Amino acid sequence: MPEKDLAIVFDCGATNLRVIAMDVHGKIVVSESTANNTSPDPEFPGGVIWDVEEMWAKLCSASQKVMRVIDTKRIAGVTVTTFGVDGAFVDTEGKMLYPVISWQCQRTTPVMNEIGKYIPLEELYAEAATFPYAFNTINKMVWMKENRPEVIEKVHRFLFITSLFIFKLTGELRNDATMAGTSMLMDMQKQQPSEKIFAALGIRNDILGDVAESGELAGAVHQKAETETGIPANVPVFFGGHDTQFAVFGSGAKENELVLSSGTWEIIMARSAGFKSTKKELAAQLTTEMDAEKGLYNIGQNYLASGILEWFAKNFYPELSGNDLYSKMIFDAGDVHPGESSVWVNPSFYGEGGANNFGAINGLTINTTRGEIYRAFLESLAYRLRYGIEALENAGGFKAEKIICVGGGSKNYLWNQLRADVCNLPIQLVDQKETTVLGAALFVFAGSGVAKSPEDARQLVDYNPKIIEPSENQKLYGELCQKFKERMQYIQ
Image (cartoon, rainbow, N blue to C red; front, top):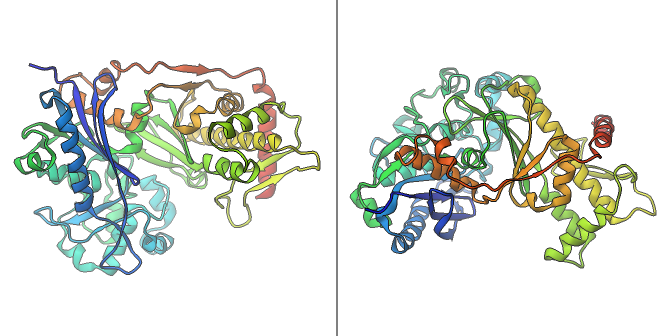
């Protein structure tokens, strides 16, 4: 008998839909990908939806290709991971009563702006601990109640996208905790649907149903799903969840450790046994979600990062591209010594600083070089990271000892050194690039009995960590960080 050493992960991203076979050592054996896309809402002019049937057809096609390459007897189990908040209202047979409203749809923005007519925002945040993003599930609930009340009257369950595909594989109508934790509908302390919030909305508090944990058995691939996907019938299917939570776990982070996902947006998250959701955390734009492991939380903050640097590169180094571009920018910035330039940057280039606080490049002189400006951008983002870490430590009641950095931004060695110096924390880089898929696969191996627990499954993975220690500049950057904070407070 072949060893049951493969996890099949359906990874549903906003850009790509993938089916991946990963082994117990975190190696991708085979991967098939196809583009994902939103569609116009046929029932609401200007609305944006996900066509679940189209997505499922693409996933099935990708799965068929994967199954033709691997020995299916090696499959330990199947799971699904995707972005948060989005889902559908379904009846007792799993039939969708309305299309899946995409997080990209603008119809829910006024709902979030007026949520106070149901429950005061600070009260809502204190209970759910989720930052009030316009795309949160709660806003889809309210929009449906106000605009399609007949759907609310007929609904049996609201199923997140992960659960819609779990249903197609097994026939099970059940949500998982990590997806529910993105909804702004949970009592985050109790880690269960909030009676208080649902009562305020005037919606049944059992609409999310009995929430499962990641790695819990959902059922087995049924005959119809075997025909569609090529995965043999009776292969076990395990509840998956939100891609962010699996990325955090897949990075190797333990309790009270930080994970920085560095890309167009930076997401800094901590795995913590506790959290705070007071006015202070709301002002700091912290959001708390439920960790992939029951009883823990992921406290996070996100902000525009590499997106700003891409804007800078396009406007200040238009003659270069690719590796030549980044090598030149890093070389120029590395030629500038800490504290010797008068240039500093307000990194609120997305307007997140409020109406009176937009991005700005300050301290320019006739002799300023573009290397100085690029270094100032990197430093300002490192300062922002430090402020975010301080807010997370306060909310979670812990002291960070290192930062695990993943994503495209982790390839910039100068930026990594500046982060280490400014935050006075080691930066740990790992070889694993597919941390979301890896995290999901680890829960399959635990659920199927290949490993005793997700942590035991993680021990089989070689992360080959590389550590970047703070340099002798960390003391100087501590002083410059305080100066930067004073400048930013002056602007605000």
